[in-house]
Image (tube, rainbow, N blue to C red; front, side, top):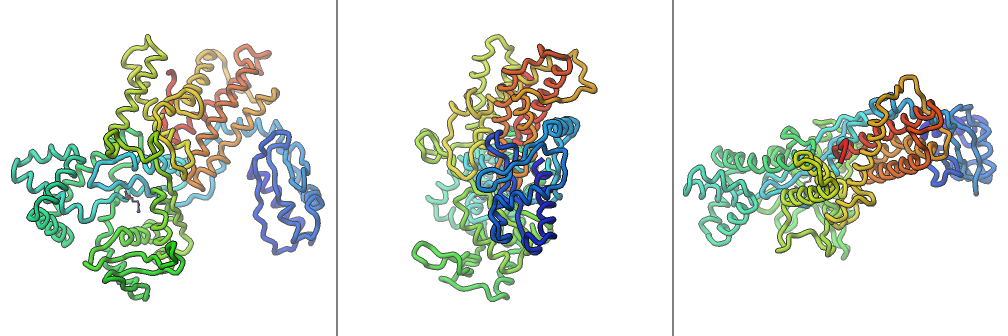
Length: 581
Ligand code: ARG
């Protein structure tokens, strides 16, 4: 309906151009928004205000001309001018009911799909030297919900897990692996089951023994120059480390597979070329022996230039160097239209710098869009970055285990008589959903306080509330199994039926925003409002005890579409639903 309204306005504007009211070359972006209050209709536009200068008339006058030139549409009941010159559109109830019927019959809830694009999504991307910690939760969860949403909207998505699998720390880890193997043979395999301890122990050895440290340095050099033995060790290490990550993905219901891993090391062979090409274009400068690029728009607070470091004085390459190579690959090999990076906001400057440089150096197609979808920090109750009681980083796996235990307590307290197997399964779904939803429902760019109490509450915009709301809607059908809905249709009579119908019709608009801006919280807020609209409807409009058979069926269809929309929406967020809880 929103795009329909937009196209009506576009036609009217064209007519005004032909009549010479608006200059023919005037380019207007026609903005149409949902109204906040139904007394202002369903949609409003400020188009008249946008045209005042070009048409040299006052906005209300132009608004009237726009209305006079709108093509006939049986979707629109009436159009009004409001305030200084807003135009309000009231959508016809039958047209709305038709839209809902189409949504019911469609696999994609009747969405009008945009032109399909190829979109690279860089997310999760942990460093493999250590175990995944809570810092990786946000990237993984938010990225995955955007991936699901983009695919639902018909885009071709290429997941890229840009893991940190390269760098000097690997020398230390390989040296330690070597040492353990020499001492206990295959036993070393076992030690790696706890990467965190492994890393710590390796670091201790590195700091206490110069021999060890020297061996570590030697191994890095050997690794980088392609030494077979070192590469074998390195691959074994990464393989174990990655299997830790995938255990977590699986537990979280995240859609990343091993095929999606393309880490920093995948770009090794290109790095020399990156430097050579920047050099050939005269973009490189030298700073303390390092090769860097200065870009005039990047300065620190003191006004001093902030370079991108491309190659260290000792010849080593950096994070930025592999990102330059990765961008080129994403543009020229993967041929993406967009590349989205779900990475901590603290890396914002890095991305601004490399995005800019890649365009300047023509490493990427000019029209391709690179978007850093940054996110804030997950904090503990004290407002500081989330830590264990003893001040260490919280391992993701421990956090998920705790969520599971707490969810089990919660579900058991609500269902004291439920059998253990069902309790456990419900708790698994609720626990994971709560952790994910708490993250997804916050504005991506803000920091947020991680709180088990809040995320496991049945009140407010939480996973338990929504999952429970879903079971209630589904429960209505269970009691209406004998009602035959073939040939039934939706008729919107009661004010709350209309309000629910209007909410249901907004799903597509919300999804546009989710994929354009990378904002799953918009979908969360929508589902929360939808559940609220359904409760208000259900309070005022009896379904099974409706006045007539036709009314009962119409209301059942509304409930059915609500269930379908909730389930689809939750699944796009990466949440499973339950039939009872
Ligand atoms: N491994 C990095 C980290 O843990 C994130 C990588 C993000 N992606 C990228 N293309 N730079 O901070």
